[in-house]
Amino acid sequence: MRPGPLNLITDVAGLKVGQAHDHALKSGVSVLTADAPFAAAVHVMGGAPGSRETELLAPDKLVPAVDALVLSGGSAFGLAACDGVMEAARAAGRGFAIGPARVPIVPGAILFDLINGGDKDWDANPYPALGAQAWRAADTRFDLGTAGAGYGAMTGNLRGGLGSASAVLENGATVGALVAVNALGSATVGDGRQFWAAPWELDGEFGGMGLPRDFPAAHEPPPAKRMGEATTIAIVATDMALDKAGLTRMATVAHDGMARALVPSHTPLDGDLVFAASTGRVPVGDPLADAYALSHAAACVLARAIARGVHAATALPGDLQPAWQTRFA
Image (cartoon, rainbow, N blue to C red):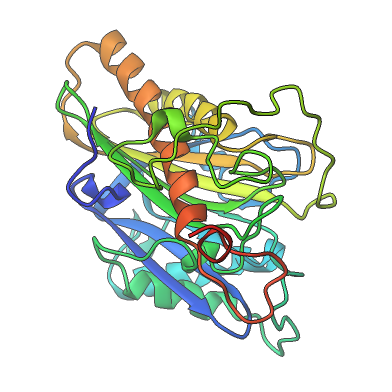
């Protein structure tokens, strides 16, 4: 397993990510889209999720593919970012064809960043415009850290952020992850600078510091946020041709990466959710062996992406938490 050329989810050929944020609002939106509709699934492990159009991703539901997946700040208000993406996608001729009509399929998930120091006293919901802006900005290269849906994110002790990573496997498949880290838990060990995800790091992508010799394995951390104020939302993607059932399994196992990188994770106060996506460009060889390899890779890549998001975050005026770059770099 090695990183792809960009070490981003867009190493999965055909995928693009667009991002938009508002500095005063201290919040933003990230959109994953592709050259053509793609298969997707979802799995939720957190106790306080916020999502849209996730039921249609179940293996037994009619719609075979989506036009975009949205990660947004703004709590429930941020679900409206999907409206902006839908309008922009429809204007581009995208959507599920029903007779002469086209309906873009845009599932999304949100995180809570309403009390992060930004100005939330808006007259009109800003998220539809941010969603449309993010769709139009879609490209293979995009910023990490204080960007997109991670623009106003926080964790248990440090500023959160937007992370991504990728891996190329021996079976020829590429796996990537995109994540907005706004967790109740912490990505770093105790009060130090080292990341829980260190055992899965590749090529020193978040500092190459390893784990400390002694760490608080039996520590019982008190919650630093209240109900509904935390959530890590992510997308894992591959170019291997998985159907919605296979992607559901991939999303489920990818949650292991969240648990490796954030301590604690999947709490009753988090809304942790993972989408899985496939462009279907690489045929499946051995169904069992390939599913095994892809699921393991998805968990590893997601753990790395979480650490990269926190590691890359930078400070903004009025922040309630220090950024890793400010405190440790």
